[in-house]
Amino acid sequence: IEPADIRAWVATLVGSGLAPSTVASTYHVLARIMATAETDGVVPRTPCRGIRLPRIDTTIEMCFLNPSEVRSLAEAIEPRYQALIYTAAYTGLRWGELAGLRTAHLNLLHGAIDVVEALTEVNGHLALGPTKTGKRRRVSLPPFLVDLLEVHGSTFGSPDSYVFSSAEGKPLRRSFYPRHF
Image (cartoon, rainbow, N blue to C red):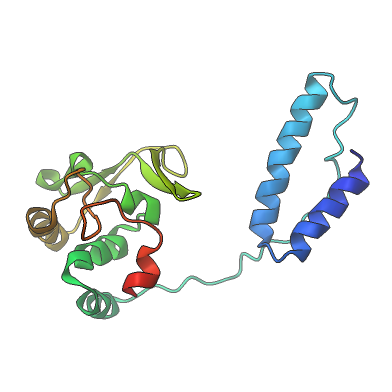
């Protein structure tokens, strides 16, 4: 494998319509593999040197809902998912962290969530694992959300102890979005 092969491969990834960040992530996996191969003496020199990757546009401004928009969204969705909307809006947890949140990590007495794991879905299979950063953190909850989560837990408790679950009591999947929005 020569650097020209790597450049052609990166160009193919870009041409297939992948986002620049996806192309970069994919390339970095190969680059780590090739660096290990060089260290182990399998290849004399990694071909992943001096490869230009597509620029990642960091100027995209994120859009956040204001409190009245959050309330409108929560009121428009099924009651089962209202607490999910408020928790997402007021804690900033990622989707996998919300979907994988278990009651054992919900500390309503102290008004906090201990974020220790996330639920991921790969090829249709769900798995609990570490958070995106691999770090644990504690997120404070506003008092109204503590009350809302108490009611939510007593009304929509899941047999698998997920805070947020489907109507069948199963973990939420990414298909949640198109079904409920």
